[in-house]
Length: 285
Image (cartoon, rainbow, N blue to C red; front, side):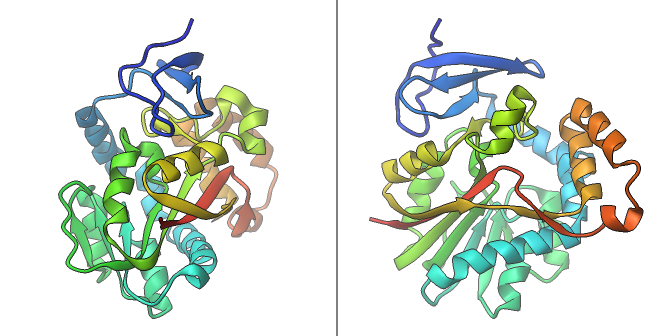
């Protein structure tokens, strides 16, 4: 039977959902009018905030924050795609974590700053000399307009991603760009793995997009999508194994067995892996 979820679809605004599957005690539903998948019911914001604070101290995001080479390589790859489409001017990274995207931008002479909610992540970014403000997007008051706003690995975490996009639209210079990355439920990895896909990770991820629903979300909030491309991550096999340990114990056991015969040097080598993410670059209309 269709599910009458309390809040409308973030991508298209419809209010009818059909159950898909359950994982880790959470129910996943799909919008009946578009392709968006999400949790139902959506978690409370207070619970999510507590989850992220704990995760940055000792969970999956602590693993992410400590993997400096992985984060910097991925940030540099994203910058390579976005930079040619952006006019001159300052950049803002929303949900900047410990600041890898800011460091990559600074290495190319870009004037960049960030905002982030996690106190642990903000402290680490500031210790590295980066300009990061601990503030929510709702409370952030930019002192200047931006040539580019990036929201990498963020929209999938938000209860109302459209509210962020509406704000970002007003922060951009004329001709400025928005760049976002999200897991892609239409990817080969997602289709092959089904409910066991590692990005089906409640409650960290609450919204699940494909190319169509991401473009619909952007269009609904005043953006024209210029490009949507695959967004591989530059990671090591050891890092991938540690992330699986945090998100999916079953996949971690399988991967650990498969990787056991590999030499340590190979497991620590940075490689470009198509993990099932996409990047959209859009401009206000």
